[in-house]
Image 1 (cartoon, rainbow, N blue to C red):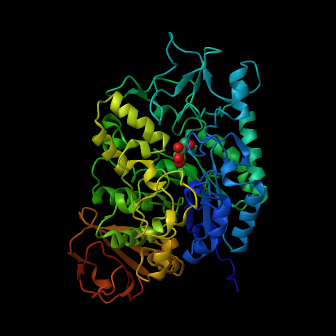
Image 2: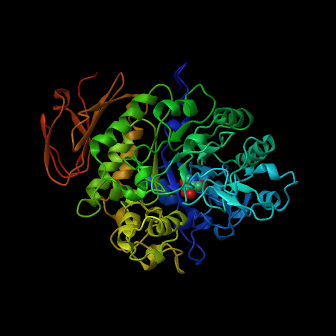
Image 3: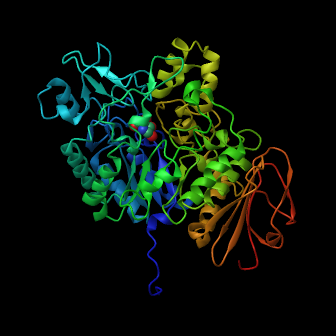
Length: 567
Ligand code: NOJ
């Protein structure tokens, strides 16, 4: 029975998203590279975990300079991943289990091997020239000194025409010219192609970079280099909201789909322009404020890996919880394919690996928003420390290695320590399915080495152990779904400056929940609000808990307590 006039709740507000990095998920044909048929094989596992939506990192034809984030044909499947028939079957199998499938929309740039760019470069008079951003140099130098995200300049000179093209990422990822209405129409058509197949949404890669300042002003100097920071001139640029509203009007509004934009450098207030309920743009965005905390461009950005403090993390996450409440919708994540493993970055990946991975699950999943679980997070997979740079595959890491060595004089040990802490390959080693050969990922030679700890940390063992991280994720997902307050309630941070406890209250008209996470490898005592002392413990990552106003907490303990009295 439906309640008359019940407010319409979009499905994505109740969804839990699971991110698959297809290259590293499951190989089915022994070539050492994960593929679509491998994903089909693991759908029942995902269903058992309780997630609702699968987001696949790019699966389109690509020369793989940046593992598929450099697309050469938006309407073809990457040959290593399978065929369009495999994709159609995957989509059917996903839907037949009541799951949904979200794809990755990478339209800030294409591959330089995309036919549009091939033509654009070959012939300055072709109608594809203006699909990309070409500029003349200034006094024999590139148009600006902006630094690319993958080191070096954002401009590449084409010897044939003598002009430069813009690439915010690698030189094999030329930026599309969104000022050109034909480019926008091409993208809209391509989106419809996939949506008409029944795809349920898009994660939108670096979507707040589409609109560049038309004059390409010089950026702020970056100390220690002759390059500059151009971000103020292309992040959240002058026409970005016009472009996204047009995309919504032309495409998205005609389908019941979910969208999440990747938006580095947005604050909660700016994000409301992207995901505000009335804006007609996106459903939610990924902000970077907690994962980039303290990273300072002047100090070589993330490679300087400054220490994190819990009050800083709490401040950021609470500002997003309260900043968007009632206005827009949050996405919740600790890690993804670009970040180190959550338990290694925010938890304790040695003796308290299991406890701290569970704590991160609880603290994240009880906030308001749509949670994103990255493959292997549900097992508490950890960072990897390859002993030599030769084992690494990621273009960002390899380019940074050269830059830090050649331009900044860092020695091998110092660079490797940074890579071990922050490199993207931490998240890209193959998924651990079992303790058998190659962790059950492939019968061939894996494209990147495995994390050697797979005999201890793997899905088969985790499913068989009721105390595993995996079971905690499954139980927490189910619990979250049974409590509408988690979707709808307000969020109040307690004790913002407490150095080791992250605690907050979620409340609606019926329910008041206290969430307590103890980010510390020693026992502690934490004073809780009186109304929870006779409360009900709904979730605990240790077997028992005595409630008292002075709560005794064990290392990395996480609790959810429901007050008995109605608010
Ligand atoms: C963000 C993606 O998540 C990352 O993996 C990629 O390298 C860049 N965008 C460029 O597409």
